[in-house]
Length: 195
Image (tube, rainbow, N blue to C red; front, side):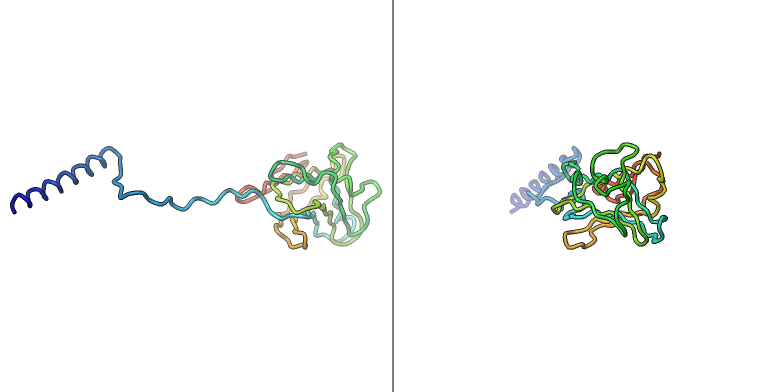
């Protein structure tokens, strides 16, 4: 019986010694395989299911409500400008004769190339992307030869096929040459390239 007790005590001393030795060498004792912990959510890829990109200015009195821009580029998760050559509508009136809406997405950022709204009421330009897509980033190039303040209080809305608002940006700062927003950021905010 004494031999049994001595054997058990020696076994315990050996096990404790092995555990202490491993811990001193940086190894944690293991009780067998364990399941992996919860993984972090993947980073956002952008705003999904976007069919329309709408730019709006809240002022209602013409000419203080005008939007006139050189270009809007809408990039998908593959960095492809999915707005290029797409259909653009706008209002509250027709496009200005000097700035047809098609120029908003023609990839021409030269000085005299711009799209221009007319009429009193809520001004907007809306790009139909054709199919629902994930929008990663938007780059807006202001009109370069005049009137850069006509982006004042302008916001961008990303809409689904049924016109549900998926995302509304903060208003852009007026008078900037280029305005970029990256929707893969945790808190997307406008970044600017000054005139």
